[in-house]
Amino acid sequence: MRPGRWALAAAAAVVAAICGVVLLSGADHSAGAAQVPAANTEKVEKGKLSALVSGTGTLTYRARSDGSLYAVINQAGGVYTHLPEAGDKVSCGGVLYRVNNRPVVLLCGTVPLYRALHVGVKGPDVRQLNRNLHRLGYDAGAPVRVDDVFTSSTERALRVLQRKKSVGVTGRLETADVVFLPEAVRIAKVSGQVGGAARSGAPVLNATSGRLHVRVDLDASQQGEVHRGDRVQITLPGNTPVRGRVMGFGRVAQAQQGGQAAEATVPTFIDLDDPARAGELDQAPVRVDITTKGVDDALSVPVTALVGKSGGGFAVEVVRPGGRRELVAVKLGLFDTGGGRVQVDGDIRAGDSVVVPSI
Image 1: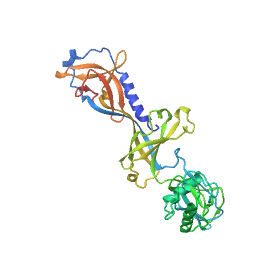
Image 2: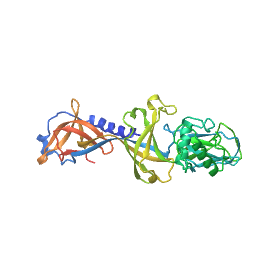
Image 3: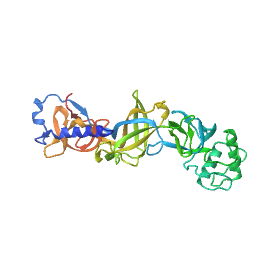
Image 4: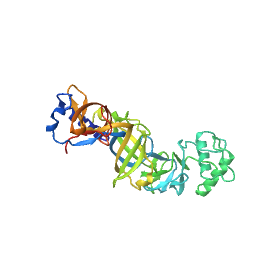
């Protein structure tokens, strides 16, 4: 069964079983109380209830919002003389790989470098270059303005970068010199080969961010229940609990091979509050419990305390003082699928004892 569906199915199964218990009368059971054996009971409680969507997910490293990897496209010509390995991390300003022993540097930004940049050029690609030069400290003594203009200050700071990275010191940024990606990365897959030909426009590697996240494939029908920002409890291998938050969804529902459209799933991405607690785990199966909504001050009973009434609706059997049992009609509210309880409204109070099946 796919993620989340088991919890909802369990609640549905309980309700279905309850509906099969049809009482012939809504009256209380006081007349036969002396012949009724001692009841197995649980207390009516008042407090917070939460609805959960539960299931399994995969702890891995995130990349784009749809879960796809960052693709690094080489623009330099020559021979690959150094390539990273899967699992390596490269920060903004670090060397991604080398062609003809010349470094290709990672800078951070969302606009690919599609042209040479030099004094007088303007545009958003220049802005992200200026931002990198400033944040990485290459403009010491001659601060670079983080704007859209390639100025003499940009040129001076770029020369400092080129000198420190052993790139030809020209004050111009060529398309073969750097790769812009949105953030520091962790290498996921290398498609180039050391000693192989480096061709302009050819993929060389794929990468993710260096931050762990959890991916859960929710039933498409559950997307309306789960929202960005919902709190999540994640159970790591070794039964270690960590907290997280839903951060986004894939844009396209994905049908399983050979499945029906109704069986489509939507990728759902969860960020960990403290990724360090997950250590170096990657591609690890985890359990997730997404809190989709809650009630702070609700009367609740165990789901198993519900009985079906003849003519429809639900009731609970309350044990009154002296052992007298009374069938009390209740309206149902929120199902707390994690705690096995359900919100009820009726002639009952917190602390009342309700009958539950014997184990």
